[in-house]
Image (cartoon, rainbow, N blue to C red; front, side):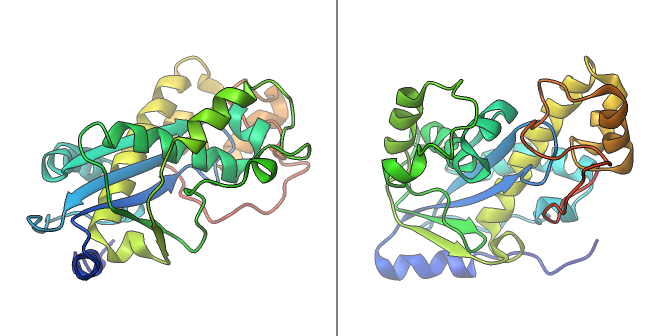
Length: 249
């Protein structure tokens, strides 16, 4: 699919605020029925970074093109990371809190090499910054009580602590965010393909855990696995609207 290439124009505007190290951040797996939600983070040095040909939002690239881009992105970036939150964590703390967990796991990876001064986050909701503890772990949020709340508390509140700037369609416009989406997509897809070997009936090697007709039908017939988000309505008999999603690839 053809599209205008993302640029570094918005990223470079952060130089005026005195920022040098900037991170682009994006998630994949939000609308899936099975598997983790995954967050990519790519840090660039605004004083030295140059463009990178071929990078687009991951949904606009073929699987083969995404895989080919991974080593190029890793070489281009000052630092990079991909964090994941499992289906069980999504069930326990909700999708937005799980995104925060995954994002902070990516954050922990990148700061080993370089600490960003700020983050550009795709979308209009800042799910990456710390929340108040009372809002994060209230009685309605914890569904199963199976997680170590103290461990999650420590993980989240020692995570990303720099300004986060949300931007709608940043994955289409900002090169660092598009690069982060590619890394997250490739890593999550590889996980779903590996899970498919143990659960071949669900077609995860093709649908990557998203809500295809075949995936829902398999859930109807076989029930969910431990990798499904069991607090979601999964089958065709009780299906509800889900966010726009990427199918296959």
